[in-house]
Length: 204
Image (cartoon, rainbow, N blue to C red):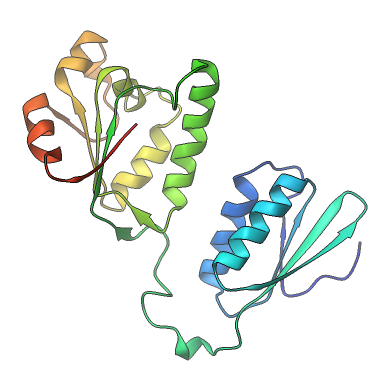
């Protein structure tokens, strides 16, 4: 294996968004260190490169067979020059957006694909620098907050950092899952409507 520099993140065998998420975790906690991410596919190479450049790193890429070595060098500033915002703890920053989840899959078209995309979406949301302030679940989306949901762990992590999560009671009754809610509160459509009117709303 070729020589590597700084902190090494070996994410070969992983598909996006994992290489970007793992790189973000390391750079967030080591902002003044040189970091080298090793990936083995072009999509991950391009996404990690874009991430590094978006954070102000100088990014160089070397290829060794099918592997890509992305070395990210921070701007030449001392750690003392960073303020609290630049060193914020990942997942601790709550924004002002409200999300309304209307179904248990993401996008239109193939529901099977949409459910796989939803898994990735919540994983990315957990790692996002800024979280929504509230997430409401209506219709089939309420199936994501129940105990055997594949999304439950990610939603619990969002709740733990201060994101308000609530599911429509009528919808829970319709799907007969009201007694299986595993995260957040049970609310009603009036409360949801009252909350989202005038808010910075994202509907999915």
